[in-house]
Length: 626
Image (cartoon, rainbow, N blue to C red; front, side):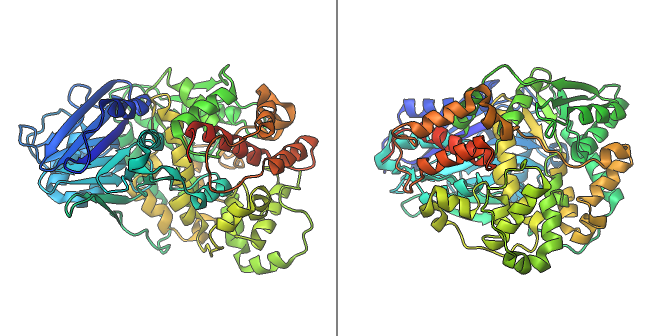
């Protein structure tokens, strides 16, 4: 797990990059790799490539430094910087033999695989990765991202095609673009920003000219023809059809193998444990394997203030059943506003998922004990684990009828707790009238967004049919929201998070399972529940999903840690969105109405208020752009 960045320059078209620009780019990714830093300049014909690497040392401390080259003895043909972990690196070493200079570096296994298969080797990698591979013979860079999108990778191209820059964070590129506005023409894409304010996430950043390499894709950067060109293609195979009933023994064996590979580390390793079944399955396999080696598994959970969101007692019960060395962590003494500001500064995106904060707190406290943590991420997306998946599947034939039912309450007027059945029904009925399943996912569903910004609502994409909600969540919600959240939170404290459920074989098993198998007997993710029942009592496998989130519902009303006061001050200022030309108007007056409505108990707007606060913090982070 590391931070990577680079600058590609056509030497005859643009002057050398100033050292201060490179220093700032390097500093912007420093938090992702505190153990080592390196940079290297490669000259090849009419191009100059500067590669930067910040290392969090997990495997092969002595031999895993980057940039790394092939062949190792000199006359490099391939050079790479890489963020992530290739879990099957030992198998790749046996398959692609050669004179390896490292003992067990996963980075070097990529080089030998690429030398043999080119970009086709990406299909052979079991791992999370953002790879920048330079081919000296063709003078091309390949920017590749893993199938699920666990590791981020952003790039931008100068307006005249003379330069390209890439980095692990969009903020690193934004700051670089602002330093030379004539070359990069930085600005805000209002249509993309509208989608961020709709759902609180999107795959693409709302800042021009920055682009995200999509999950499962590779960007081929070509330098022939007088300018830099980027061609995006999908390296990953097509997702399977839902035509294969799940084989529980095969899934369990695949999870056992996946956990074993993800326990491979030269540093202390533990596991995040919630009260749910996904993390329990991961922890169960990990505990068993470490027990066979004479070692206990360290597990961690965080105690939440609101009982509706607190899974610490359930996690403790699970830990006792699995026999782990368990620690329940408490909230840090720091201010949530200060921590949120820090995270938005690092992420440099208007990210609206409020569970970013507790994930960061958990990671920060766990980092005192371990450097690598396993987690149960992706179980819900792969095996239909959300109530909305069940509702979407059951109600799909009746959605037109639902849309025609009389319903007098506008969205957000329901003042019930956001996790209540009444709140869920309200969301489903509203969504059926507007943008369907996408509005179910939204923080600002279409009617609410229209009140906050009619311009933004008009920019949203048209309603679409969603015949397979879990598959859509795997493709969009998982990488753009959940995995971006965990990467941001863990990398902020230099903790490597690994997700065993995202091994290629488990992805195939989940996405190829028919919906009737995943939602058997009207229960979510039936296959994983059946597997959990082999290890855990019914009191754990049968408990409803709780989630890992903040009690914002009450925080706004109580002005917890000055949260309401902070937002109120922002909305009362002359320029709530700072000195940024967003290209679209957002109404501070409408935002104030939402705050007053929520505090009075007339409505439930906790997540929308959070996103409005994030918008203000993000605008301040961007600086002045006109």
